[in-house]
Length: 206
Image (cartoon, rainbow, N blue to C red; front, side):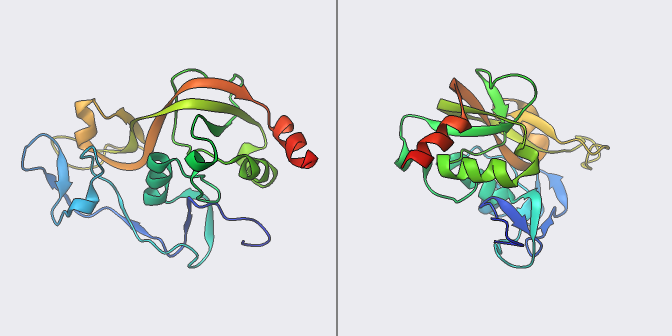
């Protein structure tokens, strides 16, 4: 808790500084790497990731900043982004996803960097998170790892491409080799609209 507010599992803290070491041309000449690279700098798909200290609870919670490793862990293991619990243990057939409302339901193949939430935490999230005051929810049968978002690098200069926008790139796109990833992306398949008011009524009836 911070200031009476619950701190989500994926939230970054002030002590969890992130760095991008000097970038060099990878030995394959087909992407970038770090000059002092270690195996932990890449995910299971071989994509280079930003480095970030791991110190949850140290300093202040940086709402709504997300910790790169915890976000990736929540995505890959289907952990609740709020409490960190295994959502597959609660319901192995489908997971609940809560996204910002953009004026339409969650569509088949929707791309998102949001990890799932367990139903009790979904109710907490919409109550406390301004980003989710207007939201859409869906039960998802097949959340599929799709790619990453990250900082794109110029292939000639090996410097970040000018601009503040992060690139969203699929794992099967060669451009992903020229990226320093910051978040993992899911494709949501088998989506059914969910109503948090129904969840709230169910919880209140228990």
